Image 1 (cartoon, rainbow, N blue to C red):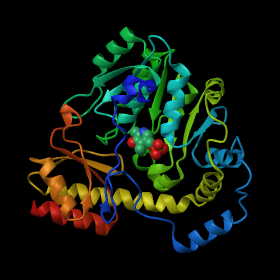
Image 2: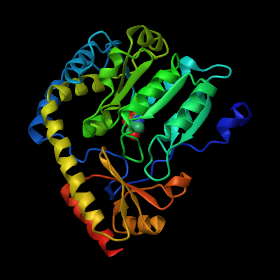
Image 3: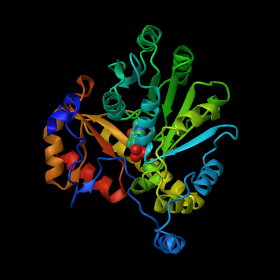
Image 4: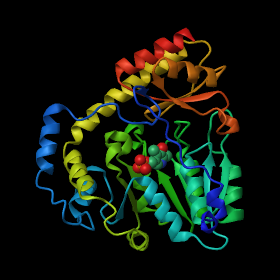
Length: 352
Ligand SMILES: *Cc1c(COP(=O)(O)O)cnc(C)c1O
């Protein structure tokens, strides 16, 4: 009976998430802090009258209003919510797919762009970043865009797994060159970056901004949002399945965003721990730590797989990138944790 499953799907392996039970979890860019106890009680009270027997608001109107108020979304722009930003990437791909349609992204980068291109039948074009600093190679990017006319171009800003912000002028040139193709600036790490392309929406009609609440502290809710020209968002909305944002997510995210100050405090704490980790890694001779505008750090070591195994034996889970891309040989990606988690990590790495 498997014969009816597409052969390209049978050749894939499912997205792997390692078992982190019992480990200090520094592998998935989660915020290590949960809600303070008092706020947790308020949140549960806010959920108390949720009607689980009813479908959620199909337009999630209250949540959209709060997002618009808290996330500096330009008033004239359209807003589309997804079950995680991954779902929005899938919606974008489904909306443009067809014969000879292409999706372009930068490598090493976020693996979901390639995977979703494959699943939706888009031809995938990976443009390699510079080897030394993981910067945009603008000549290479513009050449690929003018030759291949991608329907969709993804730019993660900051980039995952490298952590850096690309040169904004380079991104502007890419947006111009790709028109009328859509360019999605994926700002999953915006809370830690102090940089955003949101203001460019005023002038670039083919630009879309993709965000998520996952990395700021609400990964369990699965909520992403896409901002762009209202006409374009209206078309993408036709691809979205009804009720894709469940009622618990709608109510919980609305509650959380009304208490945004807590998340801002946690973000500041994470950013100051990021600086402490950078200083500590710079003092370890066998580690090269790359600059980061995100809540994680990319490290290059002399033997990353052995260090990964050793960390795991010591109860710390990080992401081993060795083997995932030629430019990431001997690299590990480490999510910034609580001060205690980070100290435990530094202590193990000092002894390696
Ligand atoms: C984590 C991440 C996402 C996915 O976010 P979800 O909203 O949790 O699906 C999207 N883009 C980038 C670059 C990421 O690192």
